[in-house]
Amino acid sequence: MRKTTLITGGAGYIGSHTAVALINAGHRVLVLDNLCNSCRECIARLELLTHTRVDFINGDIGDSILLDKIFSRYDIDAVVHFASLKSVEESIRKPLDYYANNVAGTLNLCRAMARHKVFNLVFSSSATVYGDPAKTPIPEDIGTGKPVNPYGRTKLMIEELLTDLCYADPRWSVGLLRYFNPIGAHESGMIGEDPSGRPNNLLPCLTQVAIGRIPELTVYGCDYPTVDGTCVRDYIHVVDLAHGHLKALEVLHEKGGINAWNLGTGVGYSVLQIIQSFEDITGISIPYRFAPRRVGDIAKCWADPRKAGRELGWTAQRDLEQMIVDTWRWQSRNPLGYRSPCVIPSLMTVK
Ligand code: NAD
Ligand code: UD1
Image (cartoon, rainbow, N blue to C red; front, side, top):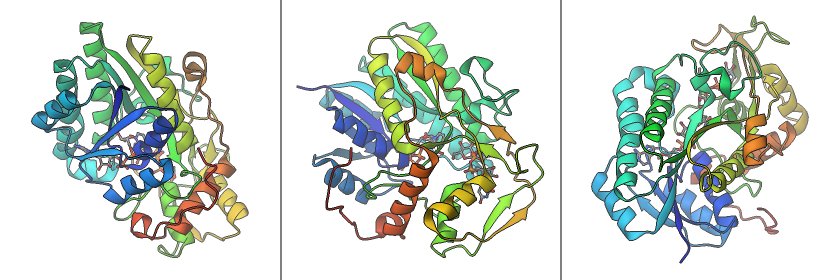
């Protein structure tokens, strides 16, 4: 029987796209998610999209008894670990929830993996571990910096925990995937980002303005030392990101120890360039106003992704236009996210 890949947080934004990539590549997947920031409808859509029954368990990575049952029942050989709380703003208000869920949750997961002799782990890290980087593009060997909020610190703590674990026990093989700014959606328009409550990230805010849910976009800061005074980020298509996980899983089966890989495009765009591109591509005008800088924002952040190119054979394939087209298709077909009726594309040529 085929081995199973456990995807924690697989009903979420990046996890669901990764589930599609893994299933299409022939993996058997099991999704474990407590649905604290997602819903069952996502799993139903994964099944429609992949024409496969997706094994799903509604449960928490903090539940050791459940994890023991899962590892005993399924023949799991690797874990892709997305489950995490991810709001920067909430992490400042509720640090204990973030340290408990993200750090203690990961510790609990690793203990269960060790008990069941599963040593391959792909972890969702973030460019936030670089803090305010001394240079751009950012290579992995620049070293980690000082994340400026509790969410970012949970990511750095987990990276350190996993690094210590790999040094202590050579059976472990861990990939730290440092994502830059994931946007976009599956080109079917059936799955995408569905933030609960008021979004904080740029693209969800921008599309909510485009559909009229928010009257105008607030642009935080116009006096940064960048091309036009607004912050520059490395936006990466979520489907490219998903393929990065597939590549990392393949390599980790061969390569032991701890490995950090940047997943970004290597190209930076300013906030105003994103607004302009969105307007050009969709024909929708986006009213915006400038506001003071947002606390914790850095001026410039984009990846040097060459290590992932060399070691994983992975490079991002989709450009900004594709990211915006796919984001907009998802948002316009699903104005209420997963609460919208599902539109199934007639020609399923999508991968
Ligand atoms: P998401 O919130 O859409 O997905 C996370 C999923 O984990 C959700 O479905 C949630 O219900 C689940 N979850 C949370 N805590 C859990 C727990 N204790 N047990 C079981 N399930 C739990 O977020 P996302 O954008 O898909 O992010 C996935 C991962 O990537 C996270 O670890 C996040 O920190 C990291 N990341 C995201 C971004 C980004 O911009 N989206 C950037 C860098 C890193
Ligand atoms: C943020 C988090 C980061 C997290 C990532 C993914 C902060 C400081 N960083 O990254 O830790 O990993 O999200 O969840 O919150 N912007 C606007 N108007 C808006 C929204 C955003 O001008 O309404 C600007 C921001 O100031 C920033 C850029 O758009 O310059 C991108 O913002 P965002 O999408 O939130 O990503 P990051 O801040 O890069």
